[in-house]
Length: 179
Image 1: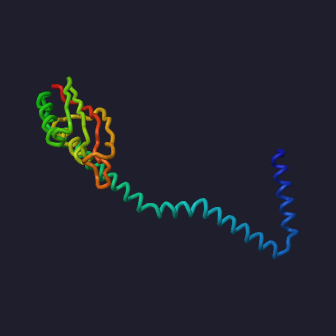
Image 2: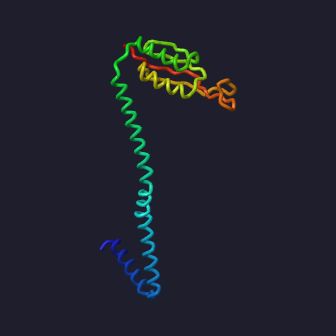
Image 3: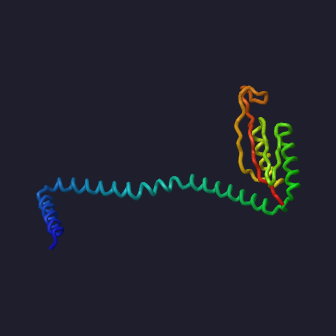
């Protein structure tokens, strides 16, 4: 017999002796307490986490469904862009200049480089900027490479009702087709 077995047997025999010394009422109370503790352990370890998962299922499922729909929309946009014919460099430059002039008028200047363009923006609206980015992506096949834009300062004439500016200013660097 190993030392572990001897200690185990000694503990078991002392536990049996201790239990035998208890009266019936105390045994019932101890048994009830042990069952209550076992039930609490089962509840906290298995049942409660499972119920929490079931309660959260609908919200998580809805969020994942919305994310899947967004991914399908993005996939469709990507496939549409891939299906478009390739633009020449000059056609891309012309499309970029036309889209920029249409969206911003005199609030933007374009500097064309070899396969790239830098657009300087002055106090343009957020909606116009978002629409312009989508437009140059689809029409000029331009890819935004870097954007350094910031919200305008207070007191401009194009501000909101409180006098705060809602325009964006800065630069956007775009990659253009080179062929």
